[in-house]
Image (tube, rainbow, N blue to C red):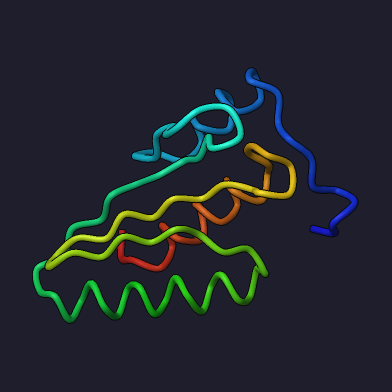
Length: 103
């Protein structure tokens, strides 16, 4: 997705896109609106491996999330600072984040 194609989604587009990424929810509001999901792991090392995988993904997409890592949990939060809201890139990143783990 080129920089020209990145735009803030309208509220109805956000709701429709949110329906395509199970387990993700809206977080924040205004310019700080994001989509986020909490991932639980059996071991801390699994959570660390996941964080590294999300880091690799974010470099590939040139789109970087907020990550909160605790003992066996990681919260991933995507938003698009450039558009001060949510873009299609956030939902694509969410889909690819989910694909990092077995179904």
